Length: 185
Image 1 (tube, one colour):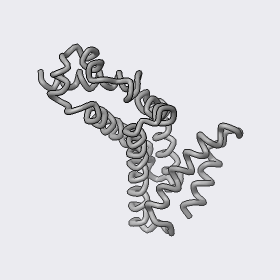
Image 2: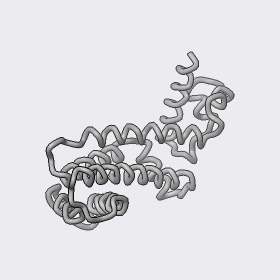
Image 3: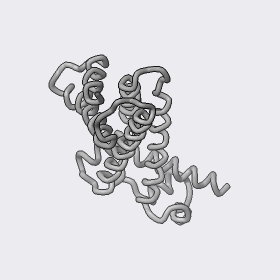
Image 4: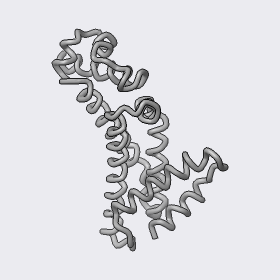
């Protein structure tokens, strides 16, 4: 019963954050959507930030699971990096909470939301860094610092997919793989 209430609160908060953003969500609105008293929400979470952070942490875990499933044993490293980045970007673009907080960070510049986007990006970079370190341990000849390379791969991929396509024809995946491969080797 206790876990059921907490799950209802988390589901209600996820719905509210996804629709109204961080700034537009209140503990009152979460309580109303969850059909519990406001005090019940505070029983489980000290404040809106803690509730939001728990939801974001769960979302990051889901995203990393999607990334793990994108890895295909036997493919060259640069191909798997592309698959991972495609999976992460698709997850980000289809997840209503992430889309809403990216919009809020851009349009309203809510400090907590900006820090959350930075946290998500850092988790992705850390994930890529670990993949690179694993490849180095298997004897892959990678010359760059793993953290620097992870940052470069992630940011380059985002630029080629989103920023480039604003004013240019979209790139096919083979062209993106070629660019990423040059960065790795």
